[in-house]
Length: 562
Image (cartoon, rainbow, N blue to C red):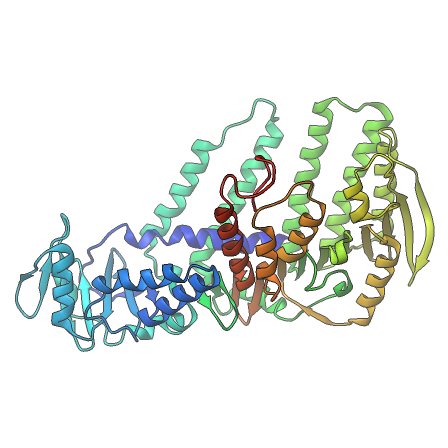
């Protein structure tokens, strides 16, 4: 998981960098480089996408209203070409310039006049608007209306701003691309120092925190700052974009970045450009919930994980002792559990590979949890579970049937879950006699719990072995609405306004909320996506619940609304 956390940290830092080019607005004459570009897709595409979302959410009139309201602000604009905002730097300051695709410049000026007042003609075809305290200068240059806050910047515009946009207008409705390496050293230093100062001001030792724990926490934050500092030296660009895509049937938000050629980060990405999971049988696209992470670790990754895990061990043991809830053999047993867990993580990292999946299956209203992972030593995991069971036995945990069987050389251990006092809904979902099955292989561990757990763990092992070399991304997660809504409706003690309409809207599929991370060459892309069916379900459920009103149905006033 170390690289996954690192990718997320890089992405968040990239969002923070987005504000830097706005620190200064005036630049001296010198050789300039792009720091950031903003891409706005052609208005025709944006309005079409807005209408698509409105139709999906059963709000067609809202989409039409958006087009109607945009008309007074877009007169003179060529609706078939993108808008570009380019921020350049001369090594000292920043200079933003906007490029509007012009169809009729006079009409564009008239539109501006209607919205913010008449401009002043300052010569050489330049119009100056004064919407506030700072003037805005506009001039037609070729097919573009160039907008700047400094009249001098209109003297040497880009010949083709779309060259910097590259594929952004086609890929996204709205996007920002940052070039960290072009940010002047002065602002890099200020950015890092401000982060460091903010951390130091907010970082205080907690009353129950030991000096060692506080020092370890400070070191972790310093390591995070070091990762952020790598952005300037190892990343070519960072892209943040939002898009609506009817062909993919949904809307998504991307954070992507490109590692510099030859950089250490690029070498790490190359290692993870072709990934496969050993546990494909423990998740599937029809699951209600699914999570998968697969990555290969560099030597530096292994060392970093080892350091982090040992710090975590020390913190956990100190906290265990400080709590004072365990003593004697119980305390020693708890320490042993921590040691076995941490040692397992460290040794697994040393194998150079992390591979794990988990899912929740609600097919036919029957619930089962499935998980599987690669480990360095399955026996160590089993020993850890035995210590954990020993501790939990004092709190009433039923006995575990160790070595209840084997399957494909995997030892199977079974815990029967008592359901005597369970509500009928739980028995309906999990079965009258659910089990939790722990499977331990030489370098793998499996946990399956719920309905028909023994059969499901065997099937998962068999399917995984059959799906050799199952390609996978570095991480992926999905949450499917349809099976969750169905099982919620079947087991809810009260009517739920809107849920029937939401289920009906989802009947065509595409009901998932998806988060994924993919690596292509030197590019990492993290995508957060909402599929069309989910948009339809939200719209249908809200519309039905609103139509029902406070007294719209023969159900209790406190019945939950979907």
